[in-house]
Image (cartoon, rainbow, N blue to C red):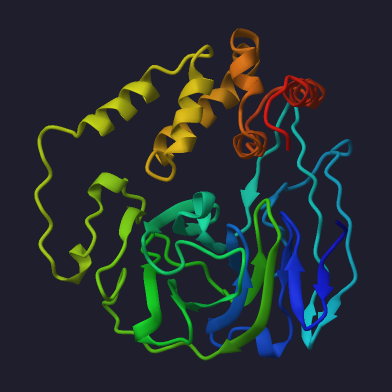
Length: 353
């Protein structure tokens, strides 16, 4: 599917890995704060990107400084689109490639909010492509692929609030605060509507003034939800409701059996068993997100050994996991060899794309 498609009635359909950047004064934050309201329909990963400058796609969020003459990073610019008064600027297609000698990469400064992340199971906040907070069991942790749902995402000086319905304290799902030592990203004023590997439909898009929120307000006002990760802390250190004055129970000196099993699996990864560990971690996402990441990282550095020692396990890897693996920039295997691996995966009788 080429570019962005706009259907009758003003519904914006964003294809996989694309991003539609809203332009014009009516869609630009004033004083680096604002609240974007919209209706969305999708099976998973309704994605909102906040940046100082528009233009990047979610699929390739890196900039390569001073590319070499033989660098085969392709770029194609598309004309601006307009749908029902919503002006969409030119957007760039960055093709993902692997190189023998990867060049230094700089992440484009951005915040990303993903509703229905991890197979439609959690609400996720990212900064510069690093997960900062994941929450389950709050409105926004799941999205609907059969009907439109009204959401709002508000940004104000490093504070990101997400809610459903019309913006108000009563409809607030979760508020995350950027407390990194370097401070929040400066100059945030543009909004991109994006998705991951499935189409997402957007409509009724409007930008309003930021909703006044109490300075100390964090998490969910009603104490709902389960924070799997917040502020870079692992899930085991997050206690739902602790930021609302509830006393956190002292951690046990004996780790839970599940946590011990995850630790042992992560420390015992080998080329012959990493595919099995990765499959198990995928089934239990997002609870096993750390094991999933550890296994992906292991495969990045041992890809040849994995395909040689466990070809059946590699062939039965799910399409979503294979996509997560192939987007890692640290793979030091020639692109032709990676292509052959994917062809072998597709022809081995594994899950179809």
